[in-house]
Image (cartoon, rainbow over all chains, first blue to last red; front, top):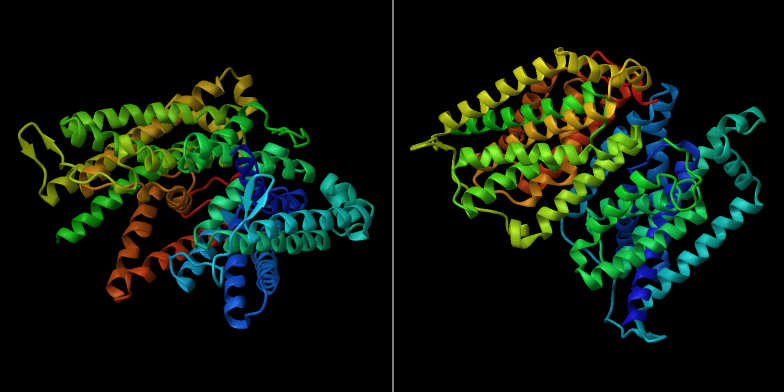
Length: 289
Length: 292
């Protein structure tokens, strides 16, 4: 029972980690809440669904398509909405409200195209789960864990060893300082939106495989991702992963003790509690506001 | 005619909501993205008291005002510690928590089943089931809200709120207690929104959690921002345009499954366009300077 709870928490935590990674990667460079990331995630899931239906083939084809479509949408949002706002030097809150608007638009566009019902990426008969240290785990859940670990490692290597990664870290640390030494923040912003949105698209596709797709799924996911980032300390990548796993485990515990319907409430109580008592999160690296 | 009166009633309720939200967002400069929470608390308070406990609607509405203001005061807690987008996120969290309570506290709210059979407003033996009479109550509510908000913002209290919006440090240095002002303005905003909720419940006679989602908080914010930050007349105009105008979509003969998302898409697009070209709204003069 305890093993199953921990494993369920870890799997949910992995999904949240992918969401939080993309969100935090974007937040580090632009420094406002890119709320529309939630709609980008949803689009990733639905694009995977469409690709699977049109092309067939193995599941990874759908996931790759989901990542690509999400990436394109993320870049389009940045290009059409955020770039003009940046040119106008708009305050953070104007960005956030515009982001809410984009979210509302894209989510409802998806609902218009696919209908309000539930869709699933799952095909074929339901396979029996594997027994892993006393917990039952399905194939899709193993893929979720493996993909998350793999993408986290790739992102870490990218940030640590490549030239682009160094520039991204420089802008995250000090955007002005980075531009003084000749780093073009525009290319870093484009890279952050491209990579971050792709991570979100993978998260959306994995959710569609492991459970199912709904036009409104982006709201819960982005909120959990934001909560995970804040709990972890918003600009810290390891913090975001820790926060995501922590939220996943808390939710698993809540589902067991109080019932799954109270997960959202408890998660947000955790968020409001952290914002009030410890706004810098676990990593304690966020700016004090 | 009944249909027109129904629309007018809804416009009045949303005008009141937008004006009460404008108190916190526009005048005091505290971004609140969870305003539907107060609306929700008011609607459920009056509905539960009148349907569950057999209380008279005026008593239910009075309790809705009371609980709305208590919720508002509690929801102001993040505003005492946070600013700008972090505060916006925390208030959004408040909206999610209240919506989750309405949806899941089945013993109290009947959850997704909603509360049917809410009586229309009655004073003593006189029941206002006739739409024109109820519409008059809604118009009176909007008028009272406008007058009250106008009095509040032109009072020394309102001046202090604007001082906090423009520069909180300077406001504090002149002896204004920013915490007390924030708690009070959230409580007042919550009370007015709670009353709007009670009116909504007695008008529609059925409520369920789907009217009070976090997305509805965004629509309320859109109405306020569209009308103009710190402009009460703007809030009323925006409610008329954004609540009244989409009703025309009903006459285009589109299926319901298309109209809902189309309307929300239009709201989203409008919000983005406003932020790009006129962030202060239609009648607003003041330009979001406080949140940089």
